[in-house]
Amino acid sequence: MTDLRTLYDQRVADGSLTPDPAQEAVLPEFDRIRNAMLNPEKKGFFKRAPEPPKGLYLWGGVGRGKSMLMDMFAGHMGDIPARRVHFHAFMQEIHSAMHEARKTGVDDAIAPVAASVAASVKVLAFDEMQITDITDAMIVGRLFQALFAAGVVVVTTSNRTPDDLYKNGLNREIFLPFIELIKAKMVVLELTSPRDYRQDRLAGSQSYFTPVNAQSRAAMDAVWQDLTGGEGEKLTLRVKGRDVIIPRFRNGIARAGFHALCGQPLGAADYLSLAEACRVLVLDDIPALGRTNFNEAKRFVTLIDALYEAKVRLICSAAASPEMLYLEGEGTFEFERTASRLREMQAEGWGS
Image (cartoon, rainbow, N blue to C red; front, side, top):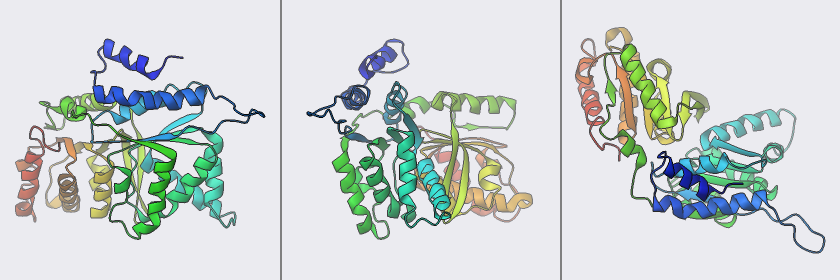
């Protein structure tokens, strides 16, 4: 079976990838895992099954190609059961499965859930591991200990070094053994490419489309196609016991309509969670704002504040230019700051 280096070179040759020495330097780690899983060598007199290979924790700045490399790896595992999933989505599944397990009266809900995961996959490929929720922090160590013990190999990308996971989190000392577990069971490697391909792809391109019509909708679809290949799945963020649904998500890029984010009773915590989960938000159909949709307008202001502070890149379609979005009703003066931020977020290189 073709190794990843050959696949990478083929994509460079056909123009779908730009050669990058930093990306090329991490390919052997992916091939190490892939070869060990595809060609296990039984050792010892009794030919016992070999120990699973160490996984990989690949970290570095946004837009460096981590998710692209992981997708290439997860998509070429042959008959090895492998699953590629965003880390937030996976943890949401775990919480739901633990809730169902508790209904059966088990004392330890993690054990059967981990066993079920291990029975279905041999390789778990996580996109964007980050721990921001205390409930995740409290269970992730025991969960992964069980998965590793069952022989599951974990490959993950992250924007943070392991030592910075759940940084400054509540009761972080309880979480520290998980960091040591990562270092013991996974090779930790930084992708050091100086290029931000996501910014390169967006450089010089329009990020604010107005008015909302067939042409702007087509332009938004084209942006999504370019950034994600048109792919995306629903992402559920768990915030203070509630579910916040992001309709489409892929490799740190989220897409939602204005109503999905601002027409629902969401608040600052929800938007902060979204800003932590994504690096680019594609937001469709921002309407004219004013006294008739005052609550939606207030939520929009809060959303833009969260995105701005987190340096999330915003691509949107709107009924009017930023300065003309909110022309009447209470809050027009306060909206001037939001309009200014929307302008600033369109600037070349913003968010890099």
